[in-house]
Image (cartoon, rainbow, N blue to C red; front, side, top):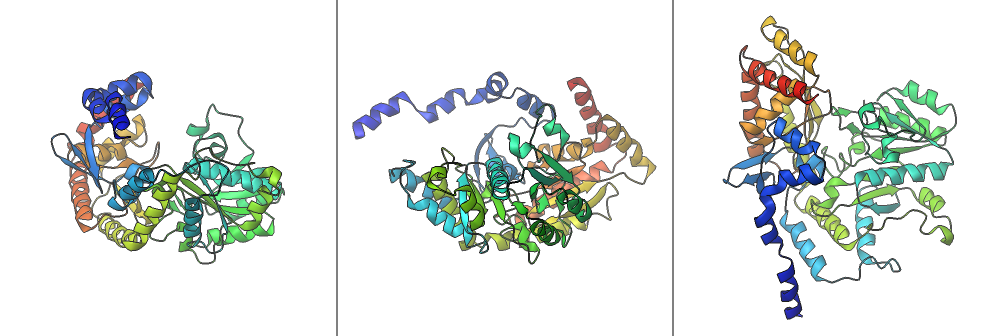
Length: 468
């Protein structure tokens, strides 16, 4: 056995491959993958080379550290390479389990389902997939089949994924354009109960899918909206679907974001991202027993909805290890504490900077919105940026946060003057201090008549025009 492994290792050496060809990363992407990605990264100065990562930090080849306030779009809830999850990955691989036989009932999926359902006692069953969009697709299919109705309601500005079903409930035309025809759907404004009630009167609605806190722009559902929507849906025979792909598993300071509002008990809940522990893609669609029993109504329908890699041992082990860390290290409590601290520190700056409009969010899901300044000194530069492309000011702040302070953040959505912070849920006061100090420095510069607004704004406009 040892000789066979030694012989095999001579044919493939990952370390050697990376050492020999790792420097080609941007060229390989440009040639073989999405060619616009390296182009975009170079345009805004994000074409960094990160050598390693741990917790809430990256390091480059020179040993410089970078603070991660993006967490891989929320995937890295526990940070990178958490030792407990990493150890679980080694154990499950070394165990040599008979995985994905398809004709047995392995223990790990049942154990992870049991653990997840303990956080949602009103739900009964789980379907495991591989990604957030797959969790949403599952929920849409189950809602339509269980109710016998075709139409799904969703919110404007929503994001639920990019496969064809989840794209049908995507609230942004930029993602939808060119991919029609999509599923029957109707968009309503978040919080508009009258619009919801009007849509339900047609009698063809299967369900309403909603992010308790929208990722695009970081807008929370208004108080009382989810509970009132649930009552309307149930009265009309439709179901409530909570998309917790990004907001779930502690992100907003509760285990699920819908739990911020008393009495809300969604019929289906979609989970992914943080559940992976940052190692193996995994998603879960949690639902009520009656929905699952309708979908899987007989032995003939046992595989009517399935996933080739769903419930694989590595993903289940990652999920179990992640939930253990969440409990043992009190991650949800930390997300609430650190989020309150960071949001509070940033909110104190609103009165100081006229370009800073609002700081909002829950837990460690925070939106920083910029707006039109009052002073003539700044208004010209702001107007110039808005005329070129809405969202450039937010990008103008994001870039020096990385270039000058080595902090990775993101603009919350296309044509939005909002920065979204979704850092690893493990950050503490040190990381909050570093971000606030860096943000203050950038805002100080932005409020100088000839500072960041003028110099960097002209650079971005030039790049944006050249890219058209």
